[in-house]
Image 1 (cartoon, rainbow, N blue to C red):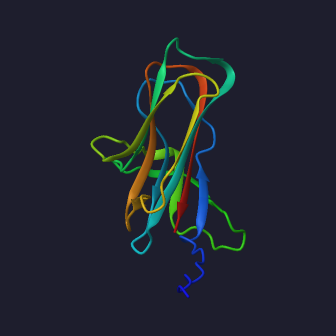
Image 2: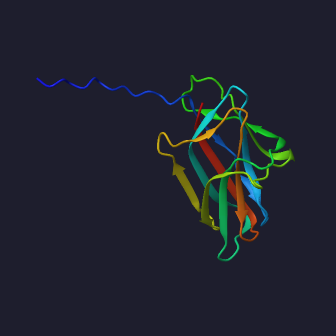
Image 3: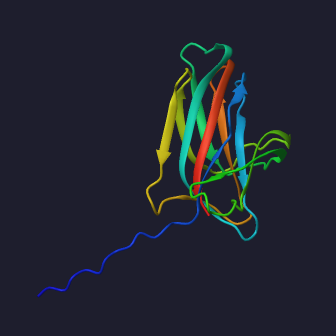
Length: 172
């Protein structure tokens, strides 16, 4: 009689969280940070998904034939200050995330500069444009201990009252 395979059990990759930039209004053609994440000296985070959406604010206008480049990158310049955002655990009984995440109101804004680009996507600059990228298990982007990560947008031309939102799903 052939030997039967042992029953396989699913093993969690860690505690899962989703963090969001919230809606960020941009009216510029300069590269703009949406969100920055940082880990402490004893913390790592594995980024498993990224989601980007473009929304309409009040009195919105979009440039004709415009595009938006979205970057997930290790910043060339790390931001300081900023408004803290709290990642939501996927399991309500999990502890709070150990990584820290900030949006806008930075004393010094994060800048992609010569930082390593881990992912980028071009989107049409129009209401409802969105993109979600889910990483194949085992190929996650690692935010190493004492590391930084940023999400940046670069618009081909300035819109008026256009809003962007970025979300990351990560495991610690």
